[in-house]
Length: 371
Image 1 (tube, rainbow, N blue to C red):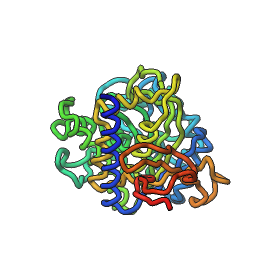
Image 2 (cartoon, one colour; image 1 turned 135 degrees about the vertical axis):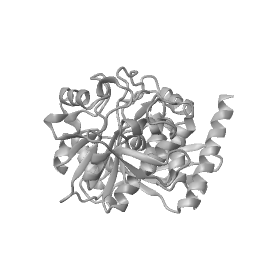
Image 3 (tube, one colour; image 1 turned 90 degrees about the vertical axis):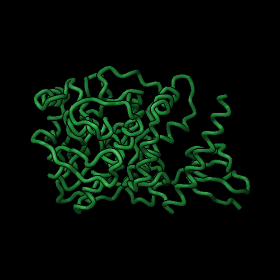
Image 4 (cartoon, rainbow, N blue to C red; image 1 turned 180 degrees about the vertical axis):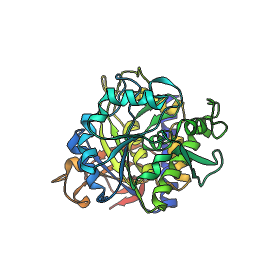
């Protein structure tokens, strides 16, 4: 049964890849570094080539539900935030807890040490605004903190991990639920049915609402002549989100930092690193994979692509192997993921195609012939 399921999932993966190639024609660039340090966070941002000079910059993070939560620590993000002269931005939660009101959230922010490195802006402290959505299947608009309109450049800096309701949390989740006001969070979770109470009986509707809300924020910045960039940090890979005050101990070892201008490609690349991980004792991806699969988590990425937010087809460039991480984009080294046409995995994140026999393969989501 398990073997048949694996083969079938491989076939569906290849089918999805082939559809993606047909729809988008070219892949997005996703940068990767295995080094999870304050310096490498700055370096991977710089690889994106986005100028922040003269911009009002926001860095969107999660401040974490408790000190035990695996949120990105101030010492880790400090170099990037201060280099950009940015404000850290957040929104209040919808489930109460330690960040359910502005006053309580401010206490948490001070306790965590975020005030020591930058100004922290709770974006819904003074109200909310509605952003238009292109997909009105579930939500008719996206309800975000009103301070969102105060920024020219948004750095969506997410901690990639599991999530008890969405399966996983990356930049799409950080941009939808994370940037929504308290009532906006309820609106997304309920798939557009309520702004005042929890409703969680429509799983795919919730996931699709996240995709629509993430697109609304992306379009808002692009249409206003502003900009937005995306970074996922793959460390402390618990099956639980940073909104869980007592998350499960991570079973999967840290992987690295990834960044892109395409949020769909970025979350997809991170999912691929998890699903293609060669698990061993003490470094096991299977709990996180089960969490994602049980909640149909990959559907968020698939639906976001369907909406036109980005592409699941990507080229992964390894800055860890570049001659200098501060060099231009073209100095990064391509990584290759290779499958046979029937979905059998041959290579994962390798730096060379040497050794492949002549034939036709799916390489980084594209059908190619090796002569």
